[in-house]
Image 1: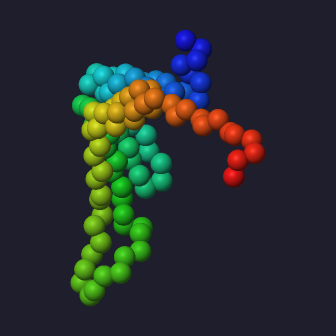
Image 2: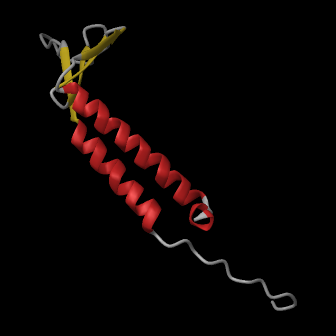
Image 3: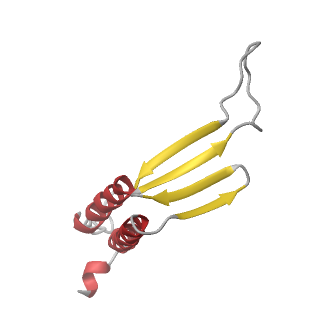
Length: 110
């Protein structure tokens, strides 16, 4: 068992798997609780399985023509399942790929 965790890939695979499991917990919590925080001109909330970022862009500089107005609200919606899926696939790759065997160095050959 000790030899399994030799190398950085397996260790990072365990870290990404733990991260994916913690995000699953947050995902399940989002169906019961509504978490949000506000910083500057950005509001981020988490509910019903989606992370949503609402960004007030009125204070940004836009290069537009005469009579054009900038969008005032920008929405970014990221479902939790997409983050969990990517982390799980990365973790599976890091854990299941066979480590490379180092070639023995031969002294005296060019």
